[in-house]
Image 1 (cartoon, rainbow, N blue to C red):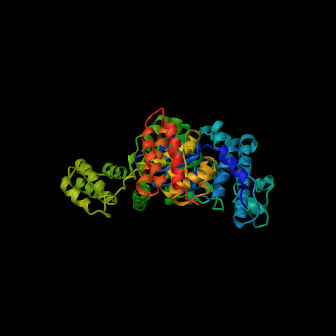
Image 2: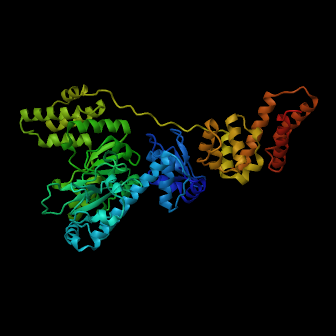
Image 3: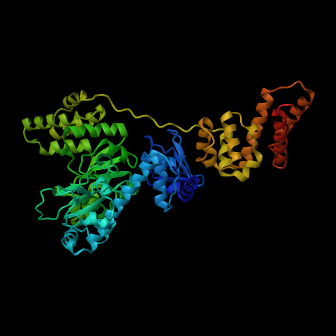
Length: 580
């Protein structure tokens, strides 16, 4: 089962590639291009280019490139059909499918389960807003600043204290309810609701599809499980899902910072405080899959929970992730150990300051040791320094270890040379080596002409012929562009390899060049190349070559340039066309 081609094109036309890429990359305008840091590889100088007029993107550092569908496929790690479906959902286009195929059935099944979850979100939400049974829940949320617009924005809900109200109200199959974790068969063989007497926090994926729930009992409940989360399902994996990422990702990209919390109310608290770039794990520790996801959005990961409690194993993972994914892990320190959800109501400015000035993860751990140590006696200073060195040695970069050793020496009045020697070995002594970003090559006249053909077709197309291009890849790129009347998207569907690379790169660059001047330069280069490499003893060819050399000089004369260009193009075609 595939999406019909007409619908794919409708989605492509209705979607702004700048808006889509802008959810993940901070773009700045440079001429007609939009440029930013590539989300697919680590770089410090922006080589990632986006063009609204062609609907293409290209990175000159890692060579990633494509259209809006390719971007969604790569950034969200989904197949083509899923990328089209997600974009269609954003622009409100209903898709139609051809029949056949297991993948199509799997996709249809996923969509069915998402529809069940969407219905449940609305049912719980309306129950919270309107049901008399939810009065205590509304009062609880109001007391915590989570009512009204906040409850509506985050689609908070209420699961009533009944056995099967949801299961009987949704009018969906028991199999679907069981598969998404909303119901189960009890000992009597009847369907029963999985969540009862709980405030419901719906969990959405990156694209805004509801995939799971977290439920919290009200204060005074006799239920020993304060929180209950959805079990894993075909549409929900805890290790790859972050609560709030659907609301936060745009601000994460803008700030180049993501805040990772422990709980759902912490995320909402950050939003209430005007810091809408917070997410939370769903009942698990932060995983590598989470970091891999977040790396696409931001370089700085700020932990808004007690990071030291995670232990040495977590520290080793954080350092490894910093190196592997080129992220920087920080810790936000909150006054008096208060959680973000409470600070959002009592002191939102403190919440903002905590994430505006976070501490590097290793610095946070070292400071914890120094604060807890006794530096009033020689013995206390020695023990404190030893404990700090033990923490520092967890870090894999010897240069980082040396700098923190100097800080510890200053705090404990221990000899800096001794502490530096103590951290030289470490647990991993190899320094982190960062690769320099690839540089964009200087492009020649042929490439400039192809780019202008894409972006300024009417101005340059009449002056170009295939024989002007020296390399086969440029000739193929030119030929297919002409066949498609300059439509680069259709042209790219017809080629691969080097020609496709030429078109990809040319589709996103911006040359502030005069098309006529560039065309004449290309004509002159082609004529000189032909004269240099293909001499002839034929008297007629010799006369033609002599005239071509004379006409070349006329290209520099404004009054004669157009006529000279036409004459040279005719000569070039005649010279390169095989005789019958």
